[in-house]
Length: 305
Image (cartoon, rainbow, N blue to C red; front, side, top):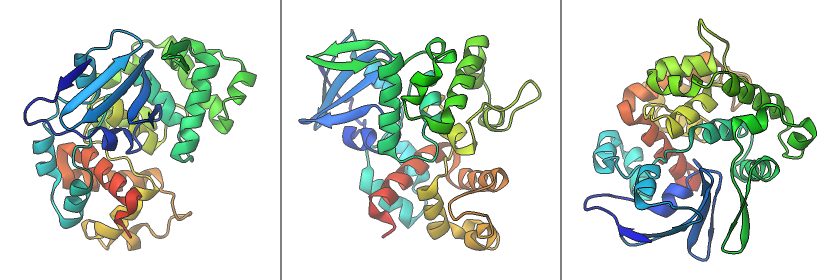
């Protein structure tokens, strides 16, 4: 199947699937292959045409929603294009779009991402899917769906150890059990403001503790990539370098002076993380999450060199 991108829609499939926000896509012979909500999808872009095939009845409406083709990217980019460095980041990867990831899979994936590089995260998620998901045969190759909360809530510890989760095992089981016991929890986050949802996940609120394994950055990634909180501004080592190098003037006394006393060159306390997040959200506005992803992708590709 195939469809033409609507007039005025800016989209770059390669940038979108290779910018670090997703962990279950890979490219082979010009096609991108991924597993989304129990379906294997292959897709490629030639100019303004997307061609795709799937193991189930995926249609263009699904892809339009998944790739956020309903976002007015031109307006978003003009809103966040506030300085020369951001302009370079936009020109480097125009067409990059945030993706509406499946909520449950996104949450567990980012819990599994802590203190890891993208290659390791991808391997970890693949192992979890192979160990606990359902096998799918597509074009003669073997794929696996991502397991649900019930599959992981009372999973065998030895099987989880086979997934190279390390210290994340307890977090994966704890969060799975939480979602199984409170089936309205994820939906309730969608209805909250960004600030309330972030506090609920990373700090806890009057009705409960924070989710185990969900720190400040994981909370922001989850809210941005699956719950439409587009103002979220996840801060990792790359983004911290960008903020320190290019946006120090936004912080009273300068970024390096304000945060240089933290223990560990790449670590931030929750309080300092919130200061950075709020400062950058105030600067870039309601689409700070798009700004973050463009800055991250550009910095990772050498934009700070």
